[in-house]
Length: 424
Ligand code: HEM
Image (spheres, rainbow, N blue to C red):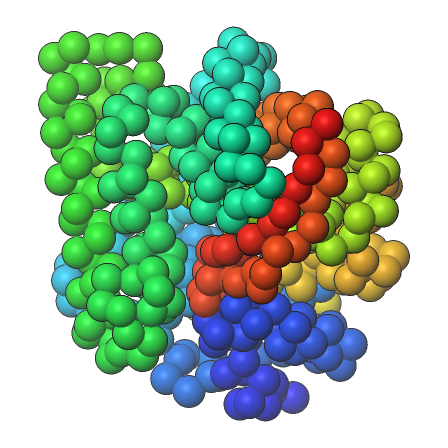
């Protein structure tokens, strides 16, 4: 059985993710009727759609059998893939971050910053992050009872944290936010560089490439600076680090900065904005946390599951394999649907309900295995501090207009969450 073209087109359509329901319904149908099948949307090579929680874990657990680097790690059309390979000397990737690597490079490059992102190291940032969170919430409070929580708080707070961590000055934050939104929002006319919804593969690749080049120019200058004058920041670690006894390759170093400067805030912002949207629509969940702050970790896990800002990653089989009774051939491409795994009815009771006291909550929003999100502890810490301070100040929230989601099939979340609020 192959997935119908209509359904295949839906799960790759950025607009279906902006809609929310359309993509949820498509995956719910697939989990029930075709949990692991091949799809071939128009213009794409065929790929396996992995919809179940258990199968996603199974693929991610076997990182030698299912590689990241052999084909594009992000869903891409045949035409766009050809353009990238022509530009990159045969490689299917415009960047080479941890996400595009396999062993031995993956392990070596990950070791470079792994310690930095561990909870014991992050603890020293607690007070500074609280100061940053408090600043944004004080500004929100001063807005007189209404704001766009996505634009005024959720986009800006994790951005400020990660930019301080990397060592990017505050004056450059608007530029970093814009570049990130142009990259992840490349199919969204309100966010991308061209202002159009549909474009041919050449324009698409050229646009993304120009955003990547802007990032690279910026971080190239930063590398030179940190080699001359090392500081206590992540840029210094990347600029002066060694892998396999050598300085990082240029593309690899640039890609390290880019992943931190994009995935390092956009995902956390989306989750924070989605959490407030969910609480405004489910006031009893808001009241529960307000009455019992020990539920904040539960609120965080549930909002990460609920938002699942990373919509997919691709893997490539390095050998013939069997998965859930299906024969996967060497070279096959697999689409891991994290939002689908996080709505799997066999793992989550009432998966379409937002419940801050959901236990256990073994979501796959951070991935799993060797590539599991490097920034997961930082993301959780930022959200914990924000909600601790938020519930000290805010007495009630409600929606004050139509919230909007970004149109993207890779990384996305809410782009506008207008709310009204009262303070304690
Ligand atoms: C990888 C999600 C925040 C940096 C990933 C992956 C996912 C993910 C799904 C791929 C995992 C896999 O392939 O198994 C999220 C979510 C976040 C978040 C949902 C927030 C709620 C962050 C932050 C950083 C970060 C704050 C900070 C720099 C990375 C890096 C990787 C990664 C470097 C690549 C890891 C590797 O391939 O070894 N993230 N992320 N992420 N994330 Fe995050």
